[in-house]
Image 1 (tube, rainbow, N blue to C red):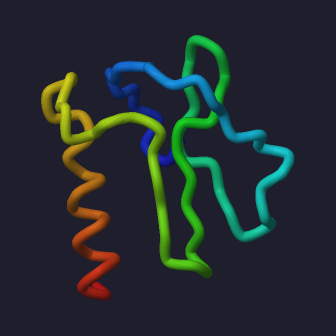
Image 2: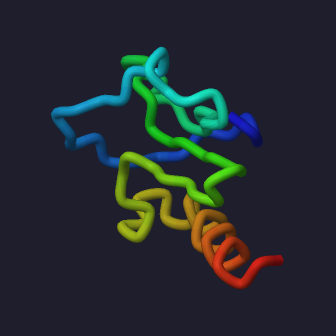
Length: 78
């Protein structure tokens, strides 16, 4: 959502997050273009983020590399 870019990923899950049930500090960061399901979340307050696919699988092959940089920056605190 932030960059407006599309990532290629494998969809293989049977559960989805209901956006209406999210806490007020949680932002949806990724949405599946095929079915509109939530594919990523971020909470600045909790210093956490997630995606509902395997970015390490690199189907793009480098579409999701920025997530590892984000994780590093979150852990290191930059």
